Each structure stands twice: as structure tokens, then as C-alpha cells.
Image 1 (cartoon, one colour):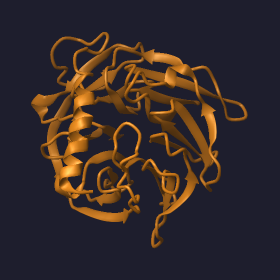
Image 2: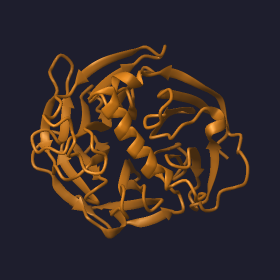
Image 3: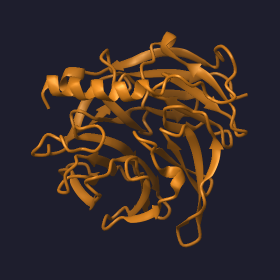
Length: 323
């Protein structure tokens, strides 16, 4: 993708995201919470090279894998902030011009299995490349499950026990499921709560306490979908609302408490089990349209500025209090 094309598509994304900035999370406490400390930018990425940081998977050694949306890449980010590209997925013939909503091909969700296998989602608007890809050490990336070219696979969650992956499609309003060995995806849930209202619907995905939790960016909701016997999807339950522009999220390790990235409003918020929320980070901390968030113990990792025009980066902080 040329620099001009990339900047044009990023500008279009920003214009859509800007429409999401007028509301405030429901139940949000006024002012800053002051519960994240040691906030700093830990790594900078090269926007001109398409290094738009979209999603992150943490490794046991304190490093991380990130997807670079515009470059169609998976990269390893060391604890010292160095970046090494692990794989570049093949570019579509039309440069992703037919990718729904966004108009450019992008790598999105990523997870890492305990054996080191990496799974990543790729949306291109073409039937030959859109889908779930697998990366194994020493091997070329391989697509193991095709997904609809008119959709936008986005969030990815892995259940190691059942050896199954769950994939959110932000355009088709669907959660797909597929075995880790690959194959034909099954539409696990198409509940109306997953649909968009014009831009992007169901987005982030995490497995937690017998359920798949997902966000809906357009609707500003955090949903819990019970995983029923036989891997059947239960009825989605709204656990929090008013979270305008909610993208990815992560559990803190304290029950159902969540930290979430709000893209348009440019915040990281703490969502309590009762659905109320408190802002923890915003533009004053250097945050710029966060897309993804992950936690290791009390260490918080936030991918920032993927779809702005300044300094895409990884922001780190420490969760100082869980009260």
C-alpha cells in the first residue's frame, strides 16, 4: 500500500471514529481515577511502513506479538522495545480496495497458543485471502480457514481446552467458531446484539468463566455470551453499555472487572461488574485512539495511534489498585 493510499484510508477511518466521540461512558465517575501509574510509551512504530498497531498477544517472557494492520504483518516486540517482523501476509491483487467499510487490507486479531503457535485474522475483501491464518516457528504463514470476503474478521479468542477459536465479524455481525486445526467455520452466534448500526459491530473477544465476552463498537456495549453444552451459544447478556467506541478489552483478574479501550472517545476505562465505568487514561497520557489492551498481572499494555496521523505506539502502565 502506498503512503498516500494508507493516509487516505486512515483519514476515512478517523472520520467515522470521530462520530463516536460525543458520548461519555455510562456511570463514568467525573475526573481521572489515578489508578494507573508509571504511564509511558514503551515502543514507537513506523506509520510510513504501515505499522499500524491493531492487536496484541502477550508472551510468557514479557515480550509481545502485535499485528500491524496496514503492513499485513505480525511482529515480535521485545521487552526492550525492539521490533522484529515475524511474517508478512500476501497482499491482495487490488491492494484491499474491496475490504468492507475500511477499504484497505488489514491484519486484525491475534492469539498465541501455549505451544507457540500463533493465529491471526486477515481481512482483504477477497475470497482467496480473507480468513484465519496460522504461524508456526520456521514455517510460512498458512490460511487454515476461509471467511466471507464481504465480512471483516476482527476479534479472536482461543479456548485451548476445547482446541477451538472464536472469531468476531464486525461487518456481518457474526461470531464464527473453527477448530485450531482449521476447516470450515461455523456461525456460532448471529444474535442481533452483535450487529453494527452503520460502521462496525461486534469487535473484541475474550473467553472468561464459561462465556465468550465481546464488545460492540457501534452500540457501545460489552456482552457476555454463555457457552452452552455442545459448544452452543447462549443468549447475549448486556454487561455494560454507554461505552461509545469500545474496541478491545481485557479482564484484570478480579472477577468480571474489565479494562477497555474506547477508540473514538480516546480513553481506557475500568468497567466494574455492575456495569459502571471509570476513565483511567486519556489524551493527557499520550493516548491516541486506542485499539487493543492486554494485561499481565498488574502490567497494562495499550496499542495506541493506529488510526491517527501521529506516532503509532505501545503505551505501558501499571495497575496500582484493584479496588
